[in-house]
Length: 216
Image 1 (cartoon, rainbow, N blue to C red):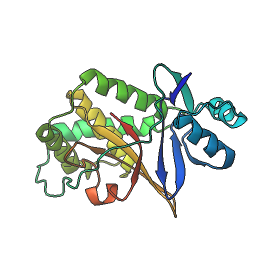
Image 2: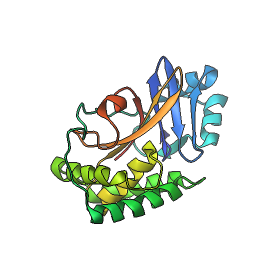
Image 3: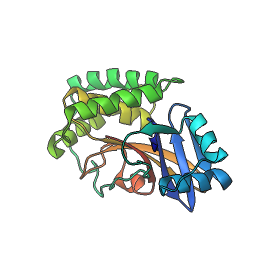
C-alpha cells in the first residue's frame, strides 16, 4: 500500500525534529520516539505494520495513495526579492476588492474552515494550471499593498496572504501560498510568492522560516 500526506497536511525537518502542520485540526506538532521511527521507516519504503503507524493513520495524518509513496517534506525556493521597491499608486477598485477579500479571509479562519479554504484554493490553482506571470502578479500585489493601510482589518500574515491569493485567482493568476515555521522559540508564518518575488511581507522574513506546507 502506498501512503501519502493527507490533504491539508505537511511537514519539514528543522533543528533535528520532524514538525508537522495539520490544517484540519489547526495544529503544529512534532513526532518523537516510536512514532518518528515508524514514520521514518515508512517514508524510506521499509515495510511497517507497527502500532505507531496505526496511530498515525488514525489521526488522519496519512492517506492511502496510488503508485509510489509520496511522503516528501515541503520544499520551495524562497526568493530574495519582494515588493519593497514598488511604487504602485492607490486604486479605488483595488481597495474595494481588498476589503471584500480581507473579510472573506477573516471568515476563512473560523474553526474548521481553514482546511476547506486551502483545499478550494489548491483546486483553483490546479485548474489554472500555469504559474502567474511575474509582472502581472507583482502589479496586483503592489496595488493590494498600496490599498492595505486603509482597511480596518488588522494586518496578519495568513489573512493578508489568503486575501491576496483570492484576488489573484479571480484574475486567473496562480502563485504559491507557503506556510513556514521556526523553532526555539516556535513561530509560524505564511506568505505568497512567485518564483522571483515574495508578494506579502518581506523576503528577508520569509527566508528565515522553513517551509512546512506549500499550496500551489
